[in-house]
Length: 375
Image 1 (cartoon, one colour):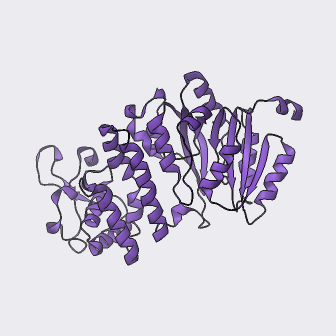
Image 2: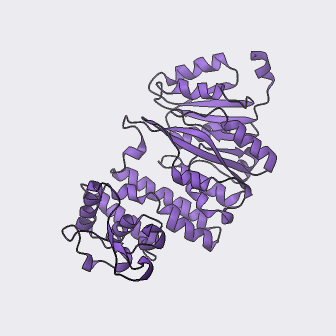
């Protein structure tokens, strides 16, 4: 078997950045070894890891010649991915975070699709690997109905699929489009995947191609949203992504991007408003005004109560926004709503207790429910 593997052309180069993951790296690399698609090479980039991750990677390289290890000084995730891409020699290029795993069909599903369609890259759905099992986010399932050879104007909401690691790129496209990962900043996935969607043709597959481990050890950047650095990086990567969309000059794509994609994760930050520092609040408010100052989050795709919170942030009504989010956090379900008695239920709005928010001081548009939200 070892001799057979030596003869295989490394058609898919899988870049695996490694830092402080000795507890997870074996499962990650084992998932590569178990792939149905065996024509791959792995470039494991030891990004100055302080634990035994580099040693573990070297032990796998001794077992399988398709695995190569590159040791570098710590430069962060974007830098490690770029180093790995420079060492890659395959016809296709993909990225795998070292605390996650690939289901056995992942490379086969994505690479076979590209071989058949001739598209520039392919993307599949994912599951979150949580303590109670595997869960496919409903929005990912919705975005990933099967289609081949798409352009972004045909499915602009796909821009919400910001992940680096559920995709396989044709290497010739990656180089021609000048793609790389931003360095020295978190949330580096979105600017690059946005540029890819805006530049190329792509296949969308419903197949689950990635198991995203949700760690509860405090190491995930998604658990650090209340920090100024986190929010600063988030705004900067949104600027970079928005610039890529605007440069294409496609008004309909831009409208979907601003209202549905760019705004999509803000509710997670709104949850942090109670107890936030003055500096963090000012950063949140200024960013919301920068991106939605003319249009307002009232018109976004956020859930109703978060549209209301967004309006309060725009108005610099910090105490009201904090009270609203504290109230929402204590609810057992969705926020209640009331109506004005008009036909077909129209005119219904969120019902917030007066002790939480004086609704007479709020723009009615920030309280209004849409037809599909009445069901």
